[in-house]
Amino acid sequence: MRVTVLVTGLVLSLAACGEEKPSAGSASAAASAKPSAAAPTSAKKPDAMPPVTVDEMGPFINGQRAVMKEAGGPEKLKKIVAELPINGKEVELAVLKKAKLSDVTAVVRELGLAGAPTVKVKADSRGDLPKELVVTPQNKLAGAPAGCSVVAFITGKFETDVWSISGGVAKKHVKGFAGPDLSNAGESLKKELKKCDSKQAFFTADDGLDWEIAHLAGGAIRVNDEDKKIESLVLLDEAPVPGRAVKLAQ
Image 1: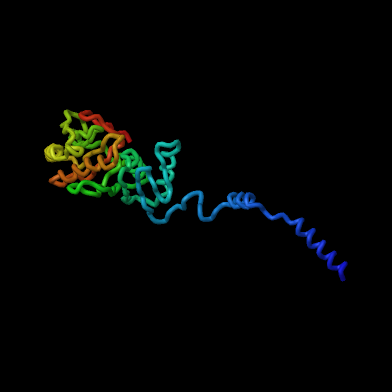
Image 2: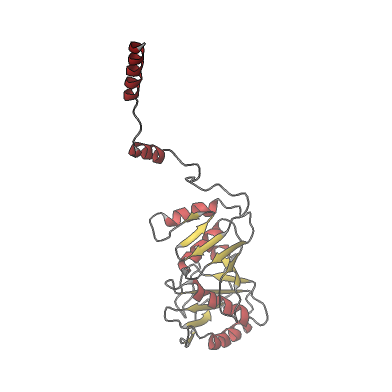
């Protein structure tokens, strides 16, 4: 009996010595090598329109980020937008504070190329201006606009220029106490809009500014269009030169 117990104990001891328990390091490596179901490598193509936003880091659409200043950023944005179920309908775009104008312009341009006729841009703005602007992507223009069509542009120095798209002397309004002087600029817009039968108006701001400044220019056109004749408020792809004819290459 004693011999049997000793032999059994020896067998169990050898079996235990032969087993290798995984170390913490090897277990961790195996876990990291295994793909996680909770973190897909790419977003699923949506059936319904997901939130379309731009914040201070850039476009964020359908759970995907496109950083426009990085290599491949513009291409990634184009791919993300191409997968959206636009179906020829207006798209809502939420623009958060400190979002760059260049990023918003890029999103509006790509939405237009993907089939959106207009984009409803929602952003914080001054209390006397609309918080929503329905803008037309420049690439959705059909034909050349009337030469007298109004352009509103805010420079990097917060000066507001108003002139006709075919060129001419720009009415310049210097910076106010807290930013662009929209009071005097508004008077110029009223006069220019009244004397032109165009149903289109154009706006933007210096490329280095935040969207909220360009939103002021577009909002000023809307509130000073007393006859409500403007049907298409076009966001320009590039900053124009005040007083010169605006190039509208698509």
